[in-house]
Image: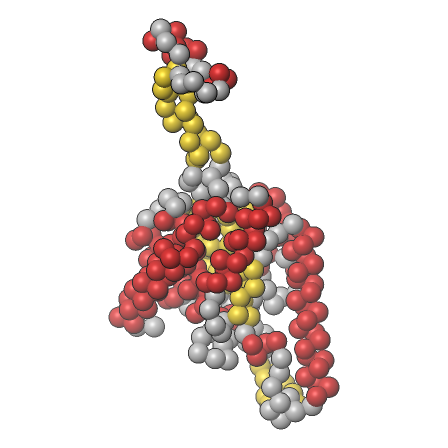
Length: 295
């Protein structure tokens, strides 16, 4: 992507995602992802109805009157975007690839975070961590993150979610909300342990991207297909109903295995298709999570 095209794309994303955040997402984000606790704000004169346990006896003694401590929610959070940049995410059978949708969702989440005063960072990964941007606040920082995602050219075509999750766990000591944006097509056993360990320290939220063509093969005769990560090729008879049924069964099995893993680890996740609107499913996910957490 040329620099001028990149600038236009980033600006377009800023306009569309900020509008979505302001109109539909910001309130849900705030209610679901709360601050780290209550922080001391100030002292004020005691008023009838105040909890006597909040009285600051030292200040009260000095001022010769009753004063209470006032606390407010400590809102600031750290949000990390773990974005899959492997070759499989570059696939798209329609107008947008999974990589393009990943960039849009990342922008949406980043603007939601900074609007709430939170810090946002980025981990771009394949089978290695290819880019790390430490979390910061502000619109300019979000624009940088989006530019990094759009302009990145992966060094490796392969995927290793475990590498990114281990980097997150070891490199970020402060608890964070970690959105993992990926198609999660690698075998679940490869990242089960890293996911478990990362979820013990951080609030890990997988965002699973899928393309319609991945869910079911078209009746298109014999087709030469290539694995985007390994480079292996094979002729497959898409015209065979048994081949299509076997493929659909394998895809459903992978999906069920993934959902069982998330459920077993107590991890909330959301699945998004690259076609159609993704803001509404995200809002729905936040609403369901808020109800479950009693927010």
